[in-house]
Length: 390
Ligand code: TGC
Ligand code: FAD
Image (cartoon, rainbow, N blue to C red; front, side, top):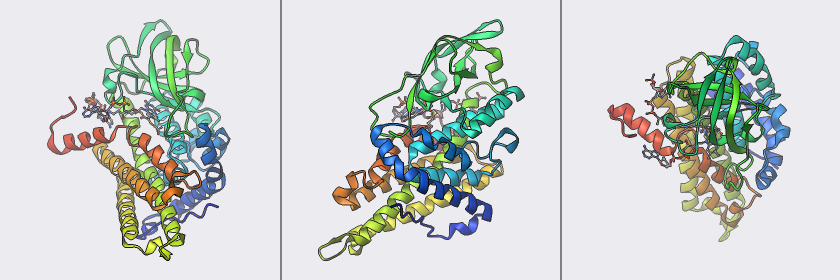
């Protein structure tokens, strides 16, 4: 049974509005009812559980802050964060699906698309009738997306797209992919590539030990004819995809707290019940050190995420501030997962508990959306003015 109790050591609920709490609690109840009971099996089977798509839409996970006129939930940034936190409490792979749909597919269409593109795609993406993917990473260009070699050429009323994207969440079942590619002048643009376009294929990547309940794959383009009406006209250059990453990274900073909370809560509960040497292991100093450090780090991460949410809502959060929160909160989550796993002893490695799954998932989370190292270098550049990337 899912007995999850969310830690709130610093009364952070006092910083939330009644609406925030209502939205958070609705997401929490849905995760408890519809995700927790099925997610372990989905991860073991390495299958994204498509049956939860309508539920994700119902809690506002697809386009939380996209205006209601386009089918979004019209919520603020903290609500978005809280929804991601609750989903990732269940599983990082499920949160990935929501992040990609919201921040990497709906956001660029909403920000940089034509009215026609918005009307065509956003309501269906919000309801989950359409699923989207985001193609930036290539086999030879991960941390350095500006080197991408996927290109398109002008051919009258359409363009011809060639190239390949790798490590793309949701690719195997996406209806539409937001693909970043260079034009003949080496300028990056976003293209809406739709399933069914000739020459467009999306093979799945198998044998992952991480994010197994999320489908990951490639996007392959062989002379794909993309109508010019499918190009996002509002912004070009690397800044366009990077602005989407800002939104997704913000969601991950909150999401990682959810995974950390679940690991902490599980370890705390277990330590009070597990008797060794005649007393609960929670009574041993070494175990208390682990738990005390976990709750301290979770509390610090919550404060960072909340403040970032306020700044983002005011339009004042910098990309470097977002990088700091993504990097810190994923790191504390992965460390907490590792410590919590040890606290459960042998039981910790089984699927009876969620910790090992969180731990493996977080290996992807610490790598995607900018690796741990890349975010450190973003902070380094921000505080010194010196670029250490190249
Ligand atoms: P750089 O010269 O720094 O910047 C190029 C242009 O972009 C502007 N810019 C930004 N604009 C908006 N938001 C941001 N965060 C921005 N950061 C930079 C910048 O001002 C510049 O504009 P302009 O007008 O001067 O051209 O670019 P660089 O080539 O040196 O690269 C910088 C670096 C390394 C930080 C960047 O490339 C980077 O972040 N690399 C990491 C790649 C990454 O995060 N990939 C993620 C792929 S998507 C994904 O992983 C989804 S997983 C989702 C899931 O399943 O949940
Ligand atoms: P590389 O860039 O090759 O990095 C390898 C190592 O070198 C890393 O440790 C890195 O930190 C380090 N490194 C690189 N450059 C520097 C430097 N200048 N200084 C110091 N160290 C450096 N991408 C998408 O576009 N869309 C998606 O939906 C998506 N989903 C993903 C889902 C999963 C499960 C995974 C694992 C990845 C996903 N990605 C997606 C790709 C992800 O964003 C990339 O894996 C990530 O950006 C890193 O790129 P890379 O794997 O090519 O590693």
